[in-house]
Structures are given as C-alpha cells and as structure tokens.
Amino acid sequence: MSPSDKNTKEIILDTALDLFQTNGYSTVSIRDICKIVGIKESSVYYHFKNKEDILNTILLRTGAWVTEKKSRFRETLEASVRVPREAFIAVGVSYIEKCLLEEKIFKVIRMLTIEKQRNEAAADLCHELLFTLPTEHQTQVFSIMMKKGFVREDNPEVIASEYQSLIIFVFQKYFSGSKPISSDARSSAAQELSLLLKRFYDRYFQ
Amino acid sequence: MSPSDKNTKEIILDTALDLFQTNGYSTVSIRDICKIVGIKESSVYYHFKNKEDILNTILLRTGAWVTEKKSRFRETLEASVRVPREAFIAVGVSYIEKCLLEEKIFKVIRMLTIEKQRNEAAADLCHELLFTLPTEHQTQVFSIMMKKGFVREDNPEVIASEYQSLIIFVFQKYFSGSKPISSDARSSAAQELSLLLKRFYDRYFQ
DNA sequence: GTCTATAAATGGATAGAC
DNA sequence: GTCTATCCATTTATAGAC
Image (cartoon, each protein chain N blue to C red):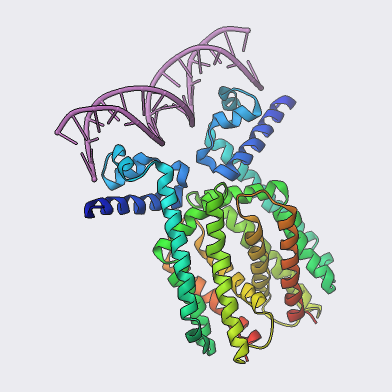
C-alpha cells in the first residue's frame, strides 16, 4: 500500500462516516462522498469492493477500537480506585466528554443509531459500545472498591447499571439531536450529570 | 372526505410508518409503500402532496398524541399516588410495556431515532416523547407524594430524572436493536427494571 | 379515486485510457 | 491510482384517461 493510496482511502472513510452519521448509509451516495473527497466515482472502486465495503470497514475498525479499550481498561483498573467525591464526578463527566463525545466515536455512535434498526452487526456494536463495554468495566471498578472498603457492600453489577443509566440518560438527553454540539449543551450536560453523580456518590461511598 | 378515501390514506400512513421505522424515511420509496398497499404510485399523490407530506402527517399526529397524553396525565394524577412497593414497580414496568412498546408509538420512536439525526422536528418530538413528557409527569407525581409524606423530602425533578434514567436505560438496552421484540427480551427487561425500581423505591419511599 | 404512461433526475457499478 | 464515458436500474413526480 503506497502512502497516497492509504491517504485517499482514509479520506474516503472519514468523509463517508461524516455523511453516514447524519443521513444514514443508504441515503448517502458514492457521488456524495466523491464530491467532497474530490475524486471520481470509479476511483472509489479501486479502494473498496463496493459501497457496503466502506461501511463494513468502519464497523470493523470500531470493533477493534472496542477490543483495544477493553484491554486498556484492565490495565488502568487498579489505578482508578482511590476516589474522593470530586474525582469520582470528574471521571463520569469526562467519560462523556472524552469518550462518547470524542469526535470519531461520537460520529460512529450516531451512525450506528441509524443503522442498528436494520443492520444486526450495527445493532450488536452499538449495544457493546453503550452497554456491555462500560458496564463490564464499571462492574469491576465497583467490585474492587467494595473489597477495599470505599463502597458499601452491594451487587457491583447492579451498581454499574445504575451508574451507566445516568451516563446514558444525560448523553441521550443532550447530544442526540440534529444540532451540532453547542458549548451550552456541553455545560448543561456536565451540570446535570454532576448533580446526579453527586447523589450517586453519597448513596454508595463511605 | 369519503370513507374509502380515508381508508386508503390511513393504510398508506400505517404502511409508511412500518417501512420508515426500519429503513429510514429516505431509503423507503413511494414504490415500496405502494407495492404493499396495493395501489399505483400516482395514487399516493392524490392523498398527499409529496413524499415528505406523508412523514409530516405522521409527525403531526404524534405531536397531537403527546398533547393528549399531557392532559390525560393531569387528570389521573391524584389517583396514581397511593403506592405500595409492588404497585410502584408495576407502574414502571407497565409504562414500558403499555406505552413505549405500544405498537404504534414504538414504531414512531424507532422512526424518530433515525430521522432525528437530520430532521430537527423529529429530534424535538423524540426529545419530548422520551424526556420532557415523562419527566414533567413524574416530577408532579413525586411532588405530590412528598407533600403527602409517601416520599421523603427531596428535589422532585431530580428524582424524576433518576427514575426516567432507569426507564430509558432498560428500554434502550433491550428494545433498540434490529430484531423483533421477543418475549425473552420482554421478560429480561421486566426483570431488570423491577430490580432497579425496587432499589429506587427503597431509597426514596418511607 | 385510481389507473397508464412518461419525464427527468439520481443511483451503483464497470470498461478501458492514461 | 485516477480519469472519462457509459450502462442500466430506480427514484420522485406529473399529465391525462377512465
């Protein structure tokens, strides 16, 4: 693969994701993508087998991202366990800011939100991103915290679900519309999540 | 409007919603709709100005549904306030079962999930259905419960948000994919929500 | 109120030159 | 690796007969 080859391919992928996340895969034409990338339609077929191959490549890479996150989580697990109230809240807020709103993954989530309705692979990936992956991680975190006596004894998986329900709630409430993410929405979301996490903290930490 | 006119128009609307909710508005063609309804494409233009008019009619009616729900909520508010634990949990579970999973509104939510990404009217309606409407209602419910001494003093709006976050969490976790709703998913969802609501009840009710 | 016929645009994809 | 040129299917929408 030559450098310029890789470059065009990446630009196609980025542009496609940009369009897919607002218009949905099937509404976006190869022509739309090419108009923005600045190449002719036929050139796309040098890099990808067909239109679906573009989508599959994005899904595949996101799957890899999930796997990578999983092992990272495990590495940093022990470190993330000493938590005063402010730090605990900051972690939750920055999870939305740094992970869910991270440019690329946010676009992927938006795209999956559309495609999951009729694409099973997209549905599975979306479920993993918003439920399985974070809940698995949080379960381990709360489990360790209980053993160390920071959190009062309880079912760590249920606590993780309660935690994740707050994250999802705020994320969906403030960032799922058609408007671009405003700094107003960002700070409202941070404020609401802070309040909810404060209460969460006071409920379970000791 | 003659009776048969109304009938075809309604069938077109139902069929369109059926297709929109899985494939998205722009992917579905007038032909697709007509094939199922059993009429020719041109007949659609007798009932609707154009394709977008079909979508707008669905959105408009859903808006009316929301308004109607709002006034209904107010009427039955006083009645819904005497609640032992089991009844409280049953209300939450049946909210998903009877309202969010109610055939028509479930389809609308699925359709809005797709369209909200690029259609501001759809985004607003979706937000109202999943956040504004239920939270407003629950805020009033908890407010009354506090005054009557059933729930311990707190900010009713925040409690309503915590409540709704559990509903949304379970609803999205079990019913947002591409597969049809199985009775397995139904009972898993009911079980998980019951557990979460039990804990919620024990936290706030006295 | 529904049909046939058709216009005009847009879609995915390929062949072959450079 | 990108281009021109082209094919063929599908789409929205309209005109006008019945």
